[in-house]
Image (cartoon, rainbow over all chains, first blue to last red; front, side, top):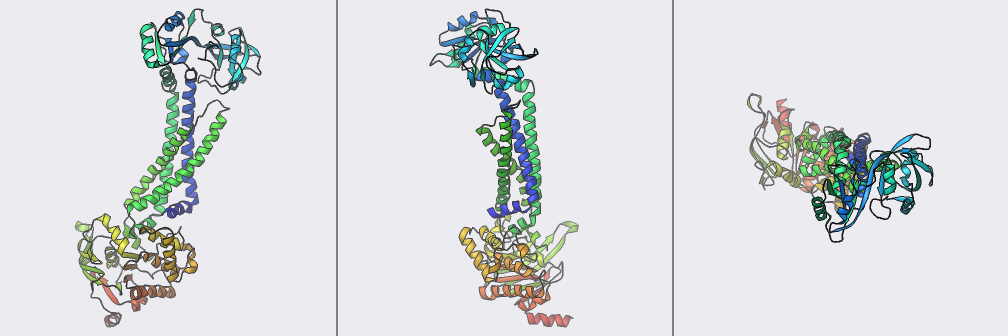
Amino acid sequence: MASLAVRNLLHDKVRLAVTLTGIIFAVVLVAVQTGLFLGFTTTTSNVIDNSRADLWVVSKGAQYIEVGMPYSEKKLYHTLAVPGVAEAEKYIVRFSQWKKPDGSNASCEVIGFDPDSDMGGPWQLSEGDVHSLKLPDTVIVDRFYARKLGVTHLGQTVEIRDVRARVVGFTEGIRTFTTSPLVFTSYKNAQRYSGMDTGQTVYILVKAAAGVAPEQLRRVLAARLTDVDVWTTREFSNMTTHYWMFSTGAGITVIMAAVLGLLVGVVVVAQTIYAATIDHIREFGTLKAMGATNGYIYRIILRQAAISAAIGYGAGIAIASMAAASSAHGGANILLPIPVRAGLFGLTLLMCVGAAMVSINKVTKIDPAMVFKG
Amino acid sequence: MHPMIEVRDLTKTYAEGVAAARALDGVNLDVHAGEVTLLMGPSGSGKTTLISIMGCILRASSGSVRIAGREVSHLKERELPRVRLRHIGFVFQGFNLFPTLTAIENVELAFDLKGIRGREAHRRAGDLLDEFGLSEKRDAFPADLSGGQKQRVAIARALAGDPQIVLADEPTAALDRASGALVMETLRRLALEKDRAVVIVTHDGRTLEYADKLVRIEDGRAGEPVTHDQWQVHEGVTK
């Protein structure tokens, strides 16, 4: 009976508060940690994911985007000669030194691409124009890192590796896992900003011709090109994410925190639902004496767990959403897309129902004859 | 007329081996519709064990129990709730009302168990409370009711779904004289006017006058059923 489940739940407000606190704690912790994990994974591979390329030609053995080694740009012509390649462009991703107006240095990650190509350029552009990068010594940086780079306005001039750079545009919300801000510039500028020899590139981005499967083209290119690896964008993205999240231990830490939150939530909820069941054990005994089946009583307990889950989830996800919203202006991005929210609701329900199982086990063993004991 | 409850050679032994304790020893008893049967006896005599077995709450060690003509002693554990639900209403010494539910919700809960829900359950629960003079207390929580009112709600709850048997365990123990009398009158009316078989376990001598039949239980054995007058005489002689 719905009202018995609700009334029992609301009867002891302190216990309800403790139960909900446990659930909210678990929901917030799991949501924030999952959101962080997603934020991190998205950040580690965002340059790859937003490249609009189908394939990446990378130096042999490069496991993630930050470690690509320069190789001869002649490979670009070899690539273009392969049937099924619609477009191929040289691409640079290299760390460099940004000199701030106050004279101090900051590490940055220079992204060099062809402004006439739709591959590899900045996304989420909020001010300026990509084609401005065709002018010498021009860069686009992200608003989020503007302060870190000492950039206050468009047109401001700074230095990268002692080469002049003028800010001609801003992106909004492009973060980096390494914390070194991305600096988008033309391929030619990037060669100078990163100190690369001419005649070399770090990557080649490839777009497959219409009707050509990227995976099939990848195999052909890998067979034709020597001393490089060829990956689909998805593969290279996954490799980069895997490296940062699991090889460095960063992801494990986040996952462990999420699991810990879940465990703490289960224990707190199990304890409080168990205590509530024990408090009402005589009533459950009465129900059994009146002819209630175990299933009827389970439904009451499970309903209590489900109601607790729904309220706790609602409050918890609201707090987590506020944290996610405020993270847009902070150092770590917390992403809570709809599927994650839905999954988290399922997880919360599962956690509460799982916790209720402990109580159900107790109820199964109730001797209905207890009702006759004064 | 077949008895509503028919108990034959009933024994109940708790524990086993040297710790074994025989709570009931060869009990025979018939309970008919339309009569009030009182089970009396000292503490530990086996009264509650007997009513628990008759109520299909406890299983006998041996012997036969027939409820409304059906043998129940061999039924599986999971089949017993259905027998309780269909045939038996319980009234407890401690009322055992659900404190978080109002009087009418307590009765509705019993209907809910029997699959009667919504408006129908509400109407029938209200009718039962009206019948027991609790119209004004429908929406009161048990904490706001007197002992007598609580017990009358409990009786109304026991009657939800129209069971043929009402088993009451010390229904007046927690009540003052007036409330106790009112409850006993209610139970008596159930037997006489609604043709229910009412079994009451009691220590309370004030309840004797409401009984059609009194059975003395002592050391797990049941005496021959006697009438109120016979009991008085018997008690008078033994005293």
